Image 1: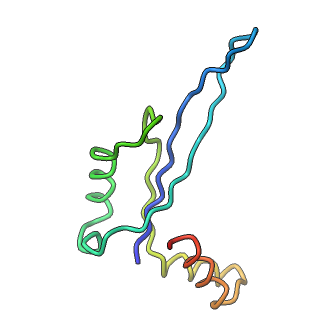
Image 2 (image 1 turned 60 degrees about the vertical axis):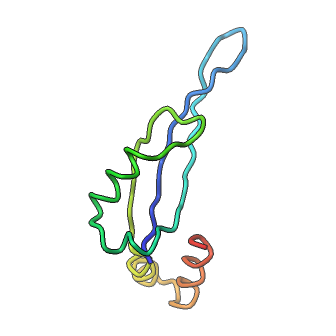
Length: 94
């Protein structure tokens, strides 16, 4: 399973006497379609950057594409049991 993480940045104006801006960020974790496994990481990233239409978003800062199995291996290297690692990945990719 391949997981795509998109980091978005949006500036919201705070109506106050100071007139400052507050930065809010959202992190979207998306499971990709099965067809995405046939595409390269660069192709997936380019398609997301060009085609994504996300309300309240001025620009996409960063797109990270990860293989879920790689994430599980990284968690187990950090001392997390393989069952817990798989459950965590399943929880965040469903």
